[in-house]
Image (cartoon, rainbow, N blue to C red; front, side, top):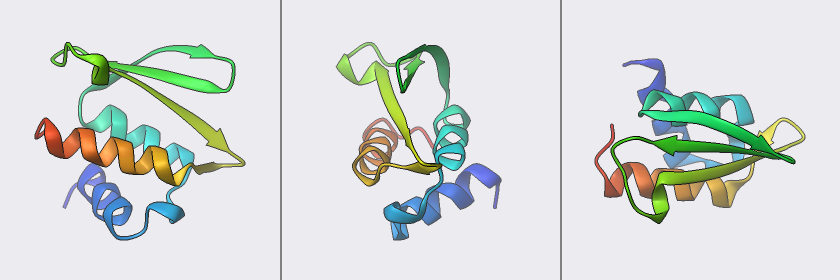
Length: 83
């Protein structure tokens, strides 16, 4: 199992226990690219997705990822079959 798949499995079972760095690794591992930082949000973009979902903002919360953002990332990964 690759690191990305391990983080994906962890995110599915417990989205409240994902660190921000794990979320960023998952996002980048499925093809998103870091575009810019706007305030506290890191903005990622996926080249193959040309809809509103192609911009993905995530925010660090004291070293942890926000659970609702983890669920959004999982939904995008599943919707576009990125894994």
